[in-house]
Length: 226
Length: 219
Length: 38
Image (cartoon, rainbow over the protein chains, first blue to last red):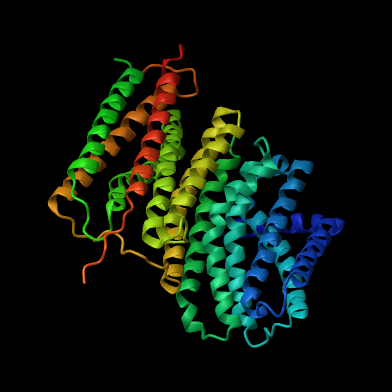
């Protein structure tokens, strides 16, 4: 177990170092996130719909894009560097490989989401101070859900035709439970509702994460075994 | 008799029995007191849903067995069940909104069952698309198995999320959907329909399995 | 007060035809594909 985590950490770190050395992907992801928010800002009519009504949806559209960008980046670099083949030859367990990629993807998406959240509060004047902790919590839970399944599918999709198209197509149904839960919880939090009202959703998100991270860990080796 | 022939026979019989169920449902089953004739859609929609769920469940089961035992016949069965499931979920997805229009006054609502139907259909479609996009059979089998298992595990979560969502945002109801207590004639029609749809599943899957990759081996 | 029973027979017919068409067309494609010589 410790071995697995240690290897996962090493792999994740390697991925992230590669990423931050070139910095192109993270910068374009951040710029894109900002762009999405700006479009929402200029697209809305403040007299027609209250910001608070739109806010959860805006936030989660932005975060979904961030997640997809993160997954795409991971698999682009995979395609280009064929690092996966190299890693498979090393004495690292398949599960650590999955966890390493999972951690790297999560770190990448987390950075983009944090910037996105910051820009969101700036542009839309939405006070998140009081609810910051639970908000970060639900963002983390939902993102883990997206990325857990997304990392697994990325590994599969690399060797298919039309790979870039396949990933969102396969992933779509799997994004629904975390997304629906996240939007609901965010809406309630922004409206100042007590946490107890969103207990059911939070439990759903947690269960989803636990189930799919475990499932993906078990299934990942099958996607890379020869 | 080859597997393909057996499949054809079973399907032919099932289709004939389906015609019988149609006649029974349309002509000999009483109209429901408050919902009008559209309630009879239930006798087709519910069994189609059952067959679609059965297809998905068996895709999942075959996928697990394939990963454990590595016998390519499980993969072949999973592929067959997925295609058949797509057909049944298409029936579900089309009859559902038609019936829904009479109950809710609108073609679509993010009701738990309709939403589940939609995503079940997407899952089957994704599965088949992925199989089409991978050429090497061993790889295709493994990927399909992974997707099949994930899909099966996903279904309860989709159902739960939509159920949770709906308890907070109930759909407008013009008519109450069919009551759980069915008089005997309706129950018989419903059960016969379930039986026929199950037989149809068996016939379809047998033929599809026999077809395999198109090389069509006879077992 | 007796409610009027809604006149929605057309929907029933549409749904039954739709289901029959899908199932028959699918069955037909299976029949044809299974007869292709191996």
